[in-house]
Length: 248
Figure 1 (spheres, helix red, strand yellow):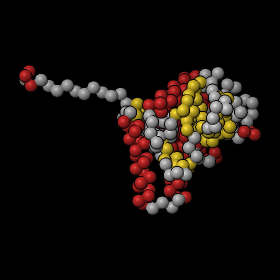
Figure 2: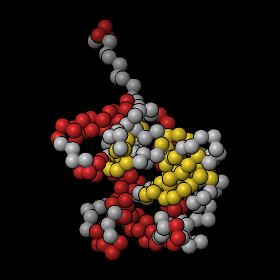
Figure 3: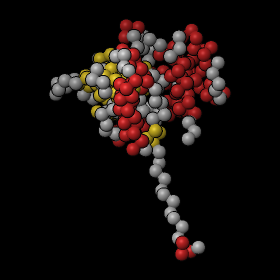
Figure 4: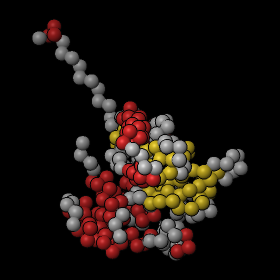
């Protein structure tokens, strides 16, 4: 299966953002990439300063993000945005809480990364479409080792969002280090990760971005598979019909 250019761009862009800011351009130049992929990643990197600082609540300038992007303290449906948690290549994740006093619940709220909303209209359309695909993918699955989707919708400005269970944990490798897990314990944990992947495969879904940072482990030792933003839904092909021996 050939990974689409859009997926490659998102994967490389996320890796670029993981580099120190002063090293990003040189790191990108050193990668073996197709020219069109490199060009699109460079354009995203050039646009990144326009949304710089949005993860720091005290440093957000009024024009740093699109005006329609929700702000901390605002409500999306029945939930209130509390604080930003992390940002990846495609989306940003906020901590949220139920705000209608029906019951107390914390959630993870995922939105499209602001810098992408400042990009060209076609790229923005593709990103929003892929984000909506993630919502439909998560809705297919129900498994203790896959982060559950709780709700979803779009803001008044047309920005899609996901409400997911909040996993208060650390990455798979960090959990193993902190708890000094031996080989049998690591294998036991890894089997649970495989169970989550198997659930996705059972629904004909290929994650395509499995890595420790996309697998969080809570204090209870249960891993949760996250970030299906670039997953692929496989179309189930009809089985080939056997030849009729009577016609041979």
